[in-house]
Image (cartoon, rainbow, N blue to C red; front, side):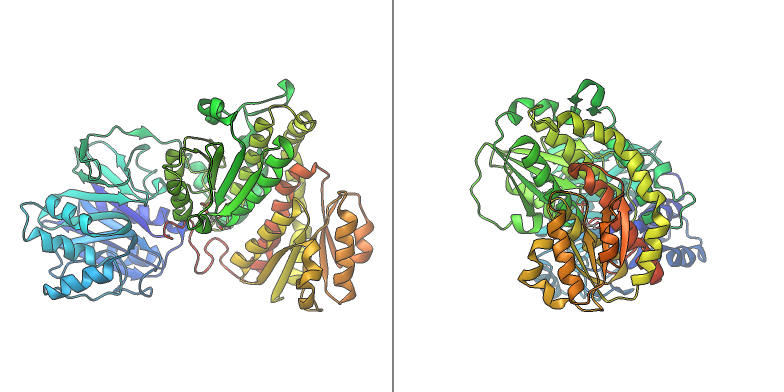
Amino acid sequence: MCGIVGYIGQKSGVDVVLGGLEALEYRGYDSAGLALVNDDGGQVFKQVGRVNGLVDAVNTEHPASNLVIGHTRWATHGTPSLVNAHPQSNNQQTIFVVHNGIIENFAELRERLQAAGYNFTSQTDTEVIPNLIDYYAKQLPSFEAAFKAALGDVHGAYAIAAISTDEPDTLYAARLSSPLVIGVGEQEHYLASDPAAIMAHTKRVIYLEDYDVAVISGNDVDVHNLKHNRHAKPKAELLDYDNEQALLGDFPNFMLKEIFEAPATIRSATLGRALADRSLVKLGGLENVLGQLKYIDRIVIVACGTSYYAGLLGEYLIEELSGIPVEVHMASEFKYRDEPFSRGTALLAISQSGETADTIAALKKVEDYGVLRLGIVNAVGSTIARMTDAGVYCHAGPERAVASSKAFIAQTTVLALIALHLSNGNTKLFKPLLDELDALPAKAQAVLDNAGRIKAIAEKYARHRDFLFIGRQYAYPMAMEGALKLKEVSYIHAEGYAAGEMKHGPLAMIDKDFPTFAIAIDSPLLEKTISNIQEIKARGGPVIALATQGNKSLEQLCDDVIYLPHTMHETQPMLQAIAVQLFAYYIATARGFDVDHPRNLAKSVTVE
Ligand code: F6R
């Protein structure tokens, strides 16, 4: 989604900000821009499309400045266009603002400002901010006071960076429900909505909290929390981030690279945690809440998209291994429910980015309920990681492709560990599952070694318009995840269904042009899934089956079979995930699509 980069210091702010915007490209955007202030006043550059267009436009003029803000925009209010791209400015072009989030009362503010003589040229909600600052700057003694007064009027969610030609030595920033960090260098500061934008320069960061307003110069940062009316000189924290992992290496795109990281992902999620030789699960992130965990009698999982499907797998895992009842809610729905909550309930948020607005809102909703708030998060230091009482990091490393792949595998692995932890060893599966988690990276590698066969099958089906994914038990959430992956990167209509539901409706869709991807792994339920496949075949529907290595029974019945190594039911999803991800990937590339940047989608969804 939208990205913010800012710089103040001795370097060329233009180069820093352009480099930062390039680092944010993976998040998905439709236009980009920057504003700078120097002795000649202010200047704005904008381009629709890729950041390299902006780089070319800026470089033809070689502007010099030590105070620059930049933005990649993912349209929410108004189409992707030059006039709607950020930075937005006031009527005199002296105040420049970039903004992530949504100003909910922008229409009302715009009317108020229009009545006071202000003109508006864009369709954005953001344009009210520089004009509101301008309005207050005419009445108040300082820009800082005007900036704060403007923030007092806006409702919604925001991360904002602002600069003014009247203040060439100051960068202003503010956040409410949208991430923003200040990077600390030598006599210089950086600003970013995602640390990836500034990691090439510094790993020392200050996390801004909700209602913080930061006044930033080259040497100093002053943070004023407007809600608590508290001033602070915050300390920088060291960010644990591996730049190397964010590079493409020899892979053609991040999606394929990240799928191929599955074995390493399982290894890092279990490292030092799944101690098979000692029959122990050690989750350091939960140690400070061990006392509370003993009294948990219900777990509510909240998440969105792929993380939600990991949550559904978590429901099976936790209930089977620990006996604790689990409910899984889409965070966007959970926010608006009125359900009873007891003190014995724990809320578990699952998020790769740790910045998903709906998941954050779900956590905020229970803030005053006195319930334990847990997290499974990949992005270290992200908002969800910091607002939960305890949690377990995925340790999957940065995920750059918009479609989540390795993070899902890490989330599912971590959920298996949490389920084992909550079982207190009272399950006969404890040791076998720990041993299996140990063996799993090699099995994941075996699935990847079969990528050529998955590619050949995917290419055969690449021109179909519809797809059905079916599975039972652990394979049911995997059917939904397989369908989501296919939809988002290949734009093929796909649905994921519980195989047992076929006769209750979806069977009506089946004909020779409507293929089914059946997850038909060896299990006590296999016979039932085979019956569903037979019903599909009887209606002329082509079937691709995901089967267990060594079980040839599906070859007669199905059109194509992809084999997976044998593993426990509880670890099957991690192997199935690789197969459905590769299937979606190869269909999308056969159709010629940019898999890392699917149309209309963004990496971290920071607005509702
Ligand atoms: C799908 C995908 C999305 C995310 C969802 C939640 O491939 O990436 O569905 O899973 O937007 O994002 P996080 O996990 O960052 O909260």
